[in-house]
Image (cartoon, rainbow, N blue to C red; front, side):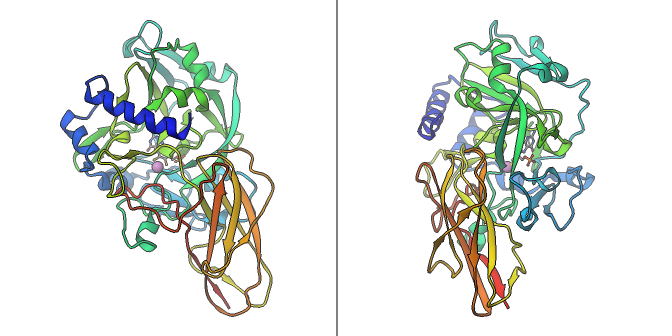
Length: 420
Ligand SMILES: Nc1nc2c(c(=O)[nH]1)N[C@H]1C(S)=C(S)[C@@H](COP(=O)(O)O)O[C@H]1N2
Ligand SMILES: [Mo]
């Protein structure tokens, strides 16, 4: 599904909603109108707080301080922890983004249940087509190398670089990781469940707790996905880097929607509605849309991620000896496809030179590792910048128009280091 196709689909979705031909579960018509008018429903609170569940320990795996910066129920990977690693992000340092808390799900009793008017016979929820874990594992499997990246990755730079802070988890650039995911194509499961030509949207629902924000219950994490993308490359993943999916990343089964914002990759998936009308949930209306003065009143739906680059260096305290040759390492990625070029500046953006690839980019939905030499002559404070462009010609601008959710910060990031 092309980028233009995705935007057109959201327009169709909205116009069908206006004419009463779509559904918006868990949102009143008035709330939906307000959300689409950019008023929001306490979106900031939803994004910033995991609520009372946070105190109970919302993440299961250890979060050593040398690998993670922790914000409540969310943990950001420190980029220096990728230094010396191979292509994929090891599970033990992969970022975690939970709207509530990691649930522990019994694989013996777990079922994936599919229902809805887009399936043959239009089964209701009580007559769902079921797959248990063993059945799913027996279906043909595929593996893809893909990033999962939070739509809000880089959000803190709206404040620190552009002077307009956005509410929500103040990620730097570590809310991204690339793993090798193995599972069953969502297309395979949908077809076995009896997908018909009437299907329009699929709605995967997480088995984690309902998301409650400021007394407003947004319901379970669930984000409508157009059937075209579902059939294209979405995966029901049960393995991450060759191991069974760990609890924090969606065990026993999660969706992986390559190249799209992390919210599409619903973890702990329990049911999937297949609808014959476009669907809305809070996660494609007041959340994960771009609202702001540079955007249409109804906001712009977040789907594909933008081009980004990061150095494998700490944000504070990276020091280099003057008069010596150093090698700077980094990675660049894009939701549009493969990275074509990466340029690096070590003098705050005055001059640029080409970085060299380290190995190959394994897939268009992964990243390109790169490196560049640096011989700083004078002690002092420096700013390192990296700017990538992808196969569609998209590149990283110097700044991005503000949006209230702080999503898709794709501008070049200025990384301060010290030469001694
Ligand atoms: N069920 C469920 N799925 C979810 C979420 C969640 O809170 N619950 N968070 C989403 C968001 S916002 C992101 S960025 C990714 C994070 O995936 P990770 O924790 O495996 O890195 O999962 C997505 N899927
Ligand atoms: Mo996210």
